[in-house]
Each structure stands twice: as structure tokens, then as C-alpha cells.
Image (cartoon, rainbow over all chains, first blue to last red; front, top):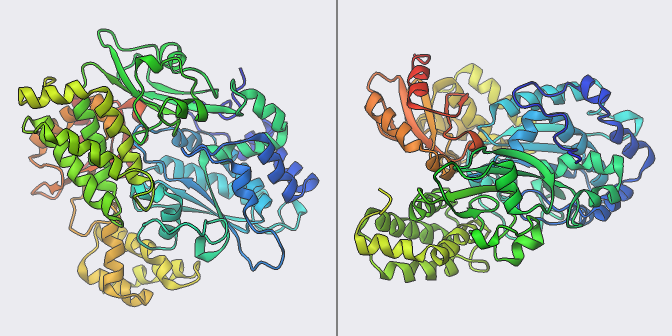
Length: 424
Length: 154
């Protein structure tokens, strides 16, 4: 089985230096793209590969790029931004790539910036990722020295500078337009869309924002072609995926596997099944902003369209397991508290709705909840849903809430009837 | 008053941007780096350099979790309280820390040695529970391990 993204990553040891990465075949595709391909050819190749954005939304990367205006009359600069603000609870895949192989990301960013003719690129990095920051800064320094960054890269006439921006900490910075406000030194509240960043992004200029895992693919696709990429997945979507498992399983961890493996295979073969004495009750398939799946969904293929078909989302591909010794109400309360704290406060359903939901859940967990709270929670999960809010923050929060109420309703009622948490 | 060094560092950041206010977060971080936190006086000083109103700078300062608007201890413990760490028992680490240090989330020890704060997911969910002390990252926490770690921070 091919593992293009992680083949050079050895957990616990330093990432490859530029010299070592080149020896292993890295940056070859940077030469290829700049010397043998036009920007449009690169974009078309990525379009043909059907690379879907790995940040969680699954938007086709090539399509995003093709929305950027390419005529020479457009004033400079354009921007490429790497979204490395990984902060969704239960998600630990970008950190693995950033710490494990920063040159893979940089090589991908050079080609991506070339495709959209961006002269400046930012890596918007999670504040807490100190090791990743050190590795990135070192790798970027090496790339400048070797002439992969700076002016007239590889004699192509193309200039690119990459800056690392370490954030000041807020989950909403991962929303791409909030991220752009934050890069401009402002409060990270999302922007009205349209215009989309491809037309008016950072400093009002055309901007593409892509996730770390997405950009890490680009050099491999240029090197091996769109057909190769599509062949890597089991579903025809294209590519492998970093899948992670956390919770009370025997071997929590992260693995690069073909897109489209089943949840059962991930849990049983890779994560080693549940810890002894524990029973599986449910799973959030891609971070805390995705709907629960249960035992009956274990044979679902983990791909964007197949997970969506059973009422959840692929999200980040890092799954969180709920076991029978963990209280589902406490589990959901923890998640809603996170979303309430991280709401930027811009729009009412999110700013007011999330703390209300959090308080009701806390009350139920403490044994003072009332049965009518359950109807209010159900109503709230719709009211905070898509179409009623300014961005995807509250709709994301509504997903584990609505599906949790659905699958674990009896456990909520038991808290209210017994006036205490049965797990405590 | 900002020190000469703080002033210089902030103006260096301003150079990289189309207009001064873009350097607001950088400026807050620079001041915090030197002083540990950002006072009302520093907010006004930053506003003046960046040609912003005091309220605009404070709006940015209070938005971000890692800008401290109150004094903090010499060492900052950031304990992850997100869901994967909850499943794996961060609460027992929290209970231990509150007992050992006599402070809860948001508080500082009376000798100014530690401030204890919650933090969202540190991206280490397969080695939960996780925390940071200052810039250092720790995982697979046990009470014993935390007890040993604290001794390294004076």
C-alpha cells in the first residue's frame, strides 16, 4: 500500500533536511512544474486529480484555484495561505505533517503559488504548535538558501516569499475568512461571502486558503499524475487520507490509509479495537463538528460522499470514540462548552444559543435538568443550523448535539429522571 | 511607556505590512513577551504607535485567548480540557493540580509561580491527556508525571 504523505515521517525523530528530502526525490516536481508546465496546466492537473480539500469541507482544490483571476492586468500581489490553525478537538493530523515533513508542505506551496501566480504566501500556524513552528522556520530557511524561495525561483522568473504567522489562539481563526481578518491584525470574525477570498481575500487581493494536508499533496500529484492519485483511493475520489483515532481504544494513533476504508477496519485493525472491558457506543467521524455515527454505521466507507450519505460528515478524518463507561451527556456537554467559549460573538444564534445550550447540558449532567430542556435543545440544534448563522461554527456545534439527542435520548432522560448522572 | 526595545521591535513588524494597524497582534505579543501580560497603559502605547484607537487595540487584545490582560505567574500551565482528554481523564490531573497548587482555572499561586488555565485541543489526542507548561508540551499525563514536571519550573 502506498503512503506518499507519510513515507518519510518517523515519529520521534527529526524531519528530513532539505538535502535529505531532495535525495529522497523531493522538490523534483517543483522543477517539473516551473520548467515544463504553465500555471494553467498545474491547476488543470489538480482539477483532474479531484483532490478534495482536507481541512474538513472537502471542496475541490483545483476548482478553488481556477476561481482566481489570472489576467496580467490584475494588480499584484495575490496570496496563498496555508491554514495550519488546527484546533478542532480530536484532530491531530496537520501537526503530524508539519512536524514530520515540513519540506513536503513547502514544495507543495511553491507549486500551488506558481499555479495561481501568488507572490506571497503565509502559513497561519496554531499558536501552540511550537515544534512545528521551529521545524517550519528551519525548513523555510533552507529553501531560501537553495533558491526554492525568493526571487526568480529556479530561473523561472517567478518570485515567492513564505512567512510563518503564529496565531494568538482562537478556534474561529480556522474559518478561512476569519483567518484572513486575523492575518490583517484584526479580531477574527468571519467575513460576508460573497465575495469569496479567490476574488477578494487578504488585503482585498485574490487569495487561496488551503489546508496543510491538501497542500502537502500537490508535489506528489505533479510528480505522479492525476490518474495515479485517483487510483490511491478505494472509492475513486482520489488519494489516501490521514485517519486518526482517539478515545478508549487499545492503540490510539494516526495512519495514512486509502480514502474509503471502512470505520470498522480503522477501529479494529488499526486502532486495535476497544480497551478491554469497554463497549463501543458511538463515534464522531471527523472532529467535534460532525454528527455521531453508531454501531450500525461501522461498515460505512470513510469518504466525503459516503459519510455524508449516512447523515454525518467526513470532516478532518480524525475520529473520536465514545465508550460505554463515558457519559454521553458529559461528552456532548464538553463539546458544546468548547463551541460556546470559541464563538466569536458576531451573530446572535451562535453567541446566545451556544451558551444557553451549554447551560442546559450542564444542568442535565448535574441532575437539575428538566424534561422540557430536551425539546429546547432539539429546537436550538435546528435554530443554530445552516442558513441561520454567519459561518459554519454554530452549525458545526449543532451536529453532535442533534445526533447525540437522537442516538442517546434515553441517557438524557435517565439523567433527568434520576436527578443525577448515572456514570458518576 | 514602551521600552526602546519594544518600540523598535514593533516598528520592525510594521515595515512588513501595508498599514500599521496590521501589526496589532504582533505588537501585543511583543509587549507580552517582555512583560508577561498587557496592561491598560500598554494598550494605549500600542494604539499610539499603530495609529489606532485604544478601544480598537483592546478589542483585538481581548479577542485572543493567548493575550493576557491580567498579570500571570512566572509559569503558565495550560491543561487541555477538550473531549479526547476528558475521555482519557484530564479531570484527575486537574483535581491534582488544584490540590497541589491551591488554585483553580484562571488563578495564580500566591507566590506568583504558576497560573493555571484551560486550553482547547493541543493536537495530541492519541496521547491524551495533554498539557503545556510555558512553551513545553507534555502528553500521556499521569499524576506522578505531572508531579515530577512541576519541580522543573521555578
